[in-house]
Amino acid sequence: METTSTSSWKLRLAALGLGILGVPFVYLIALKISNDLRLISVSGIIFLFSAALLLGRKKHDWVSGILLITPVVVVFAYEVLNKIPTLWPNLVLWAAAVAIGLVFVGILRTRMSTALALVAALLIGTVWFCGWYTPKQLAAAFSKVKDASAPSFELQPVSNGSVPTSSKAGKILVVDFFSTTCAPCMAELPQIVAARQDLAGNNDVDFVLVASDLGRDTPDGFRAFAQRRGLTLPLAFDVGGKAHDGFGLNGVPALVVLDRAGRVRFTHEGYNPAEKNFRQDLVDLLKTL
Image (cartoon, rainbow, N blue to C red):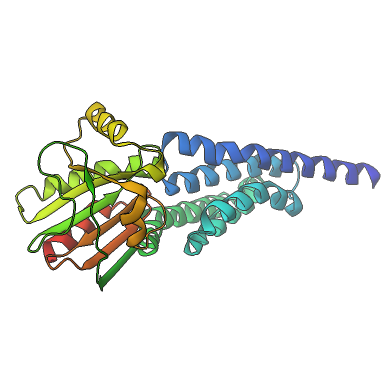
């Protein structure tokens, strides 16, 4: 009995150790490649299933499964669910990956079809979560369609040529508050550039990319950044973040759409590459104003 108990605790300590090692695998490696939340989800499923498979070859110990999953769940709850609670199904997928991994070898030896069906169900759940559910929930969390009066604001031109520094009657204005030190801003930028290109023939739609000293940027540094990247977007500076705060925004990136009457019709705070329809949804919205 004592030997069995010792063996169980060794297995559980190993599970906890694997769970802690899983945190950099699931988050840091995923973020190194992309900030896409779907990649974090898939990385978690792969890691947890593989680790549970290894643990399950010795014994089907559910306490070990709980210890394995706990570290990555705690980080996910703090970093993601704290901001976007509707992504909770990811935890169900991770729990399923652990449960299937723990029993897979045992079932495979006697009921191969059942084992393969469990893996297939996990794959179907992953495709549903990453391909449909996550993009939809992110769009709902980040976007707000409204019709509200806009605060008065004046931006400081940074780039050469025509730079929209305030709302003009008869013109739609897309203001994207940005920081050169913000990873989500950098991920969003190609989508903003592409959306502007999609609307190149619409002379009544203006875009302006806006940095601020609150984001540790300077006009000269912002200009140099744009030159290095070959950006042709009009650039402006929001001294003290007054315009940003005037719109009631929190952090960056933060996008505001003003209609031809100067009213706020849409805001989008934050960005994640999992928002696969972000560009098209923005273009479609601008075409309706």
